[in-house]
Length: 41
Image 1 (cartoon, rainbow, N blue to C red):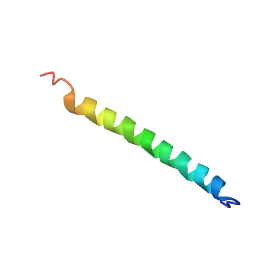
Image 2 (image 1 turned 135 degrees about the vertical axis):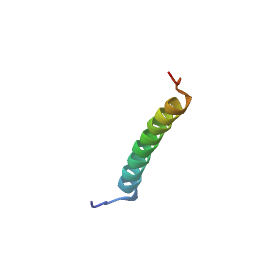
Image 3 (image 1 turned 90 degrees about the horizontal axis):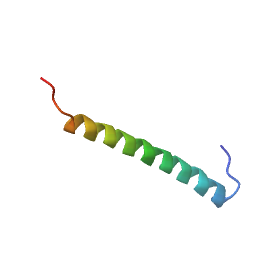
């Protein structure tokens, strides 16, 4: 990918950072629900 300005590069990297943060939040939420789930024996 070719960037012509610093602003284009900055927007591109921020978008990927937000995507990774969203995935991390969903993953942590799933892990939390898994750990605190009721054990039905």
